[in-house]
Length: 309
Image (cartoon, rainbow, N blue to C red; front, side, top):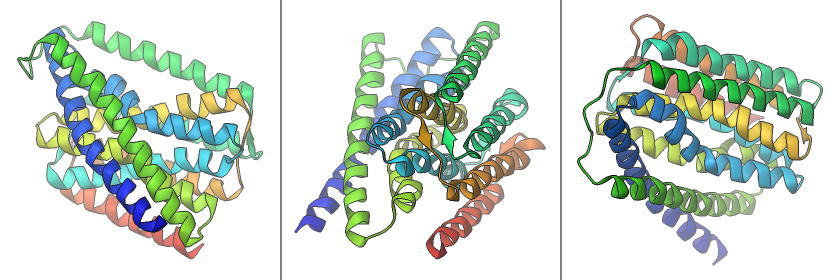
């Protein structure tokens, strides 16, 4: 009976995620068009942070409760999933164009902060001063995004002609529904995983990571189908940077986070995934279907590795 209830909670979470992401993308794209803000900036900031709120909630709560395996596994696992699985699936629906600044700055920054995250964990603990360092880098990243917005003088066509109040309602309401749906999905999936008797690290890297990454998956797929490709790629890159700098940084500043030795290999996979994305888009500034297939095969290999370990 408990497993049936957990399955129902999981499915209810999925339904809320789909509808919430639809509202969220439409509201964000509409506001971007109304104020002439580049969709890339919206994707890297509002959409990325909004869809990363489940990671933040789960990781901070896990850190406070002493479940370090879920805290670190959620961050690392979500970043691997975001690139290999979510961008892989999204690019199969529609090849994703990538702006020059994303190739030259944002993706290399994502690689760099992931390396910093790995180096921070080599002594098996992410301390408060390292969390503060993450936050300082995060503030610098926000300042960079603000400069992009100011430099962009070309106005984009409005994506939707809805009233501003309705666009804001869709943005905030969609974000709230995304969080509620993700919480239900994670709760149901975690109960199912624990019923099957798998480890905390495995739960963090797979079930919880997938559950908290569902907003990114649904948002990116819907954005790609609606032709807002900049939101699709910006959402993933921004979410990965946000996951490490804000989520892990905030968790470490609240309480030092234990970094299990096994997470070193997972962090190396996260770095390799980011490098693979960069190599796939470096030449043509586009993530093609062939690149997406390569990413999906890479994730399949990683998942098999987790199951074997």
